[in-house]
Length: 485
Image (cartoon, rainbow, N blue to C red; front, side):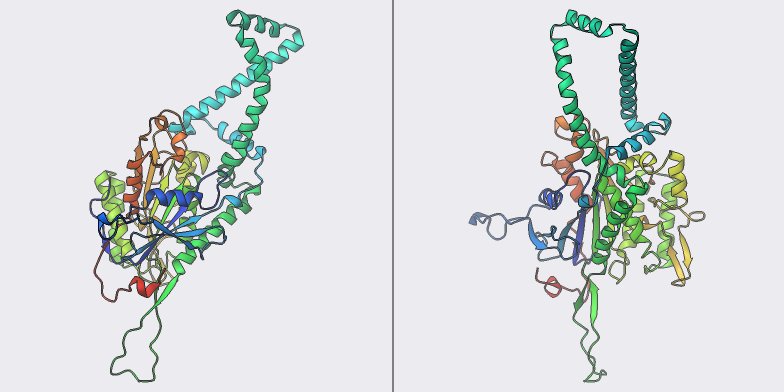
């Protein structure tokens, strides 16, 4: 459900980071399509009868924060006179190379060897499909060797039976000898260049560690640069008591007041990791009061005790209040929202752990942050920090401030409802508007911001909250003071 009331606060600039999913992605393709679809339409300026050309939805700017020159920053033009929205892409595809079929085979063996009860219900049919294929392949192999060993002549008998059914069937069987190698080549290409990305990123084997570390490190560096970007603002005017020769001290404010992470497919898992690791660098430094921390703990406890939609919405409001109370401070936590689209995190007990019990244990040990955060004792997810000499949120509590929204199409079996990371995740399990996307499994996985899905686009927009009611504030820094771009 859309939030009933948009918050009012003073924001000068916000950044949206889009993280792409699996496959042979090209730089900027995902971001450009996303912004073209998601950025709100820009109304015509001046007289509508003047036949003015439509305004561009965004301006293409240099991206000085990313590590590669292949990327650009897209700045939405709608808010040019209020505040700006900058769209960035975290492009990681080129960091994942050298995938072999043996990597995928080892992973599939690990998955298929698990008991069926440990497979998420939503994708058990896929598990059964693979096991059926394995059994049929084994039967075919045994039949072939039995025919060769005991000279049973089953091959000729099979051809005779197929001919009696239809004269075309033996010809199709002959053609299949040519088509099967071609089909295997296509399947191998998909496994290596698409599924391989997910397998290697989510499997901490020796050969994958370097790529996993590189992808995470580069993403953390991008988020750190966004957090640390500052602008100088005019210093307060001198008072009569100030010496005439004294130079006013320089004042700085955050360039980006708000950051939103949007992860599609495997990109949502990467985004989750970036939030998890970045949080541990900042959690003890946030300027939060004991009263504020108790309020979010009370809301979380109420949600965990009675996980209703009303209590979840109340918890989300407290999350945003807590975030808004500190975002303007230097060194603050700027990530207000995390949005996942077609996310494999729905199958975390399969992909990130060896069983549902293993995932639960890792969450209880606070290896994997949950929403709401896992308490340390009782209902508390705070502790006394000897570094700052005050109460702070623990190392797995980013979702005390960051709201998590998950959107999944019914036939997108890559994703699903994310129920294993806490009752604070707002799930939207929806049917696609295009009929074909509701009939063919997985086809809708790449359609979350397609023009055929206007309702989903509106939902994503509402959760991004691109339009924010500005709250009047004193000493507000205008965009003219910030920069001219």
